[in-house]
Length: 100
Image (cartoon, rainbow, N blue to C red; front, side, top):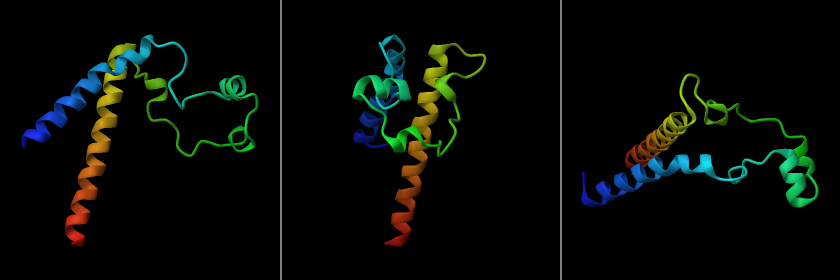
């Protein structure tokens, strides 16, 4: 692994370690607002949001994994998300190499 790769991995691991800080934050995470919260913030609910149906159901709703506490569930969710992003990026890199 290159020096830059080690720094990137360390940075990602620090971000994963800090993920549970959201558990002590007030209010919802950015972009995870309910219709009621949008109404309170904006004053109305856009028609497209009010009538939207979920495109995909959450694999881990509310980042809670049965049997694990909130802290462990948040870390596992962060690891799964980072792993999925990593796999997608590796797939993109391989397909670009094949195309060139």
